[in-house]
Image (cartoon, rainbow, N blue to C red):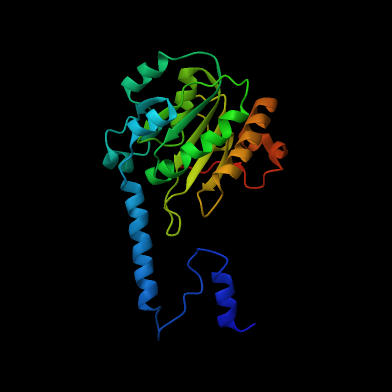
Length: 246
């Protein structure tokens, strides 16, 4: 197959920046402008205002804040995004109980992803968890993945599920990740989590992600663990793997 036809075939199969073509010694002006637009969208996704109050109301949950005081500090200090503010700790301690699961919805590095995907996924998943004791959904502003460990420990949940905006890519500013941690406590490592990634309309649909998440939760409950140790228990879901740092 001629290289130009091969390039068009590959380009039709992916939104990645492939087969860009050339104009003289460089790419065309159109491709340069498309790159700049994609880069701007990725930057905008990081700084998009997170409507934590609206999300809390939509999910009938509780809104909390990480130890990062604002977006600028959150981006400079990832460690602060992994811990709760003092007021948030007190609020969660008041709802402590004995729960099977707590869902944590955090803006992460793409609030856009959460606004577009989180509620739809939970609407599909929650009805499947008949008989599970679910803690109130916790909505976190300026949160990182590991904040789910502290939240799960405070509310008394056996497993924490963190829905979080992933780091935007040039073709995916609205990608949501899902991190599942059994027995969440401070100090858990990423190897002790399972991750479902690229949840967005052009990637893994919320319906498929809900099915995979339900499978992981059932396997985690059955085996009393998550992450690398879960091993072949999740072999039916090849998109699952140990978590990567957010």
